[in-house]
Image 1 (cartoon, rainbow, N blue to C red):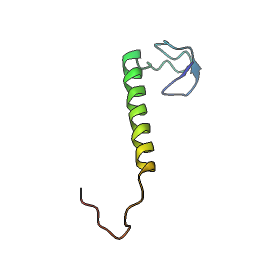
Image 2: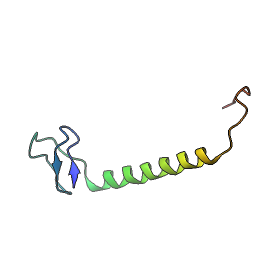
Image 3: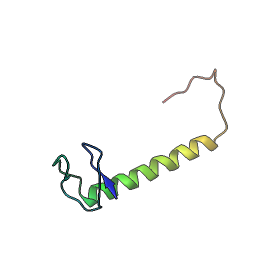
Image 4: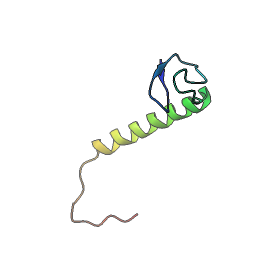
Length: 62
């Protein structure tokens, strides 16, 4: 089950238009790409949490 990106109402997966507000929903390719991106961000966050803290007085250079 998914949720409308406009009104938040729940709808079955694969729904193209929300039956409540009529807003077009994203297609499966976009949803898959967003899922992969979210997994990558989650992995990066876990890696950052596992690193020992640095010197708080040391200036970071980007």
